[in-house]
Amino acid sequence: MRYHLTTFGCQMNDHDSERMRGLLEGLGYAPVERRDDADLILFNTCTIRGSADERFLGNLGDAKRVKRERPSTVVAVGGCWAQSMKEEVFREFPFVDIAFGPSEVARLGELVARERIEAVGAFSFDGAFSGSLPSRRERPHQAWVQMSVGCNCVCAYCVVPSVRGRERSRPPADVVAEARALAADGVVEITLLGQNVNSYGRDLPREGRETFAGLLRAVAGVEGIARVRYTSPHPKDMKADVIAAMAECPEVCEHLHLPAQSGSTRILKAMRRTYSRDRYLELVGRLRDAIPDLSLTTDLIVGFPGETEEDFADTLSLVEEVGYDGAYTFLYSPRPGTEAAANLPDDVPPEVKRERIGRLIEVTQRTAAARAARFVGTTGEVLVEGPSRTDPTRLRGRLRHNIAVNFTGTAAPGTLVDVVIEGSTSTTLSGRQVGAPVQADLVPA
Ligand code: SAH
Ligand code: SF4
Ligand code: F3S
Image (tube, rainbow, N blue to C red; front, side, top):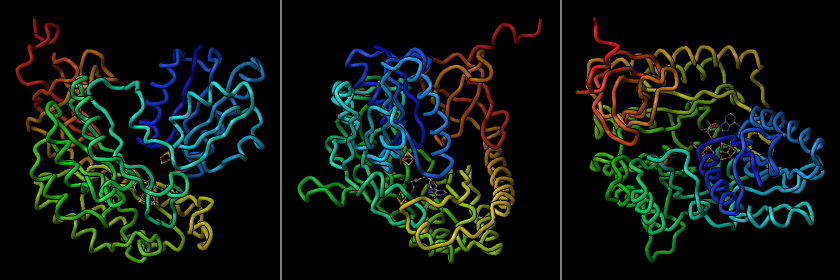
């Protein structure tokens, strides 16, 4: 039996997809390149913005075609879009055989087995953490570790709490045990995953409860793990103990993805982010005091309901003031079931949104380029990932600051090497491995 899996959305879905692969391959399924060759066509979906739905629906149309040509093909849809649709999936898309939500990954095997009897749906929030399921990791030396699922925040624009459910923390012993097993399997870099990582542990029974700071220290202490990252923290929960853990654990990398969403206090309030521009900036100051040369990246939404030119100017100036190393910028998209979609008219005209995001991208790229240039002339530690995508004679890896580096060198994937940085753009650096033998074809005759 052969399967084809397409993944949309964030790292949570990338991680869940590794588990889906692990489960299916354990059942004897082998991956195939083309949907046309698959017995099982599987999608792991996202519904964060309208554009995510559209991208997926285009792909689902392709699966419909395959199913028409070869009716024995099983079409399965998992993830956040499926959860948002529930049983409606089967009414609107009758060629779908299986639909399941993000916390039902563990039941995928059972659903696939039962499929021939009836179209099956599984939508509940009591599934096990997919983090404890078998996995087929995409990258041998880097791994995601699920530490919590769901989100208790009430950000007015966001569909995640309604599709991923209330926040549930994975027991700390399980997280650390997985980190140990990964280290034994050759992993050197771990990224802890959760929607709001720093509210971790509040739902755990008092016995054996751990804070996020404590968990970070425990994972950093696992033998063989050289780098620890995490994503994403909510600025409101970023407390002194977490900053201290980052500063004190040499394994925790000098990079933080700290979503701001807007630079306008008025808009932040309407978004229910529960911090002001000033409090966000004050937090950035404390982080930078504690962790010298910290890289910061962020998420920004353009055109939230009621956003005036003045509010938007506050977002532009926030980017300048913080000096982000990178930023993801999104056009506001009203999502069914969210507070903003219900109560706030989507009143920023599309052409205004587009014009604003153009200006914002210009500023974020300029800032990121200026930040990246600080590495030129320095030597940094790079975790080698493999050959460069653009030039296979060179290598690719990442600094602790999470910026990609293409470089000349000879090191094997999974090793940490020193690289002299010689050039930069807004998104990548280039350089040369220290002490690497000069390639013969580069030596002048
Ligand atoms: N839990 C994470 C990520 C949530 S989704 C966090 O809080 O950081 C990733 C990003 O998508 C968000 O940070 C936000 O910038 C963006 N986003 C979420 N809902 C959106 C919407 N309705 N329209 C536009 N962007 C949205
Ligand atoms: Fe969505 Fe806010 Fe939760 Fe992030 S913190 S997942 S933006 S509700
Ligand atoms: Fe992630 Fe999209 Fe779901 S961003 S949590 S896959 S809605």
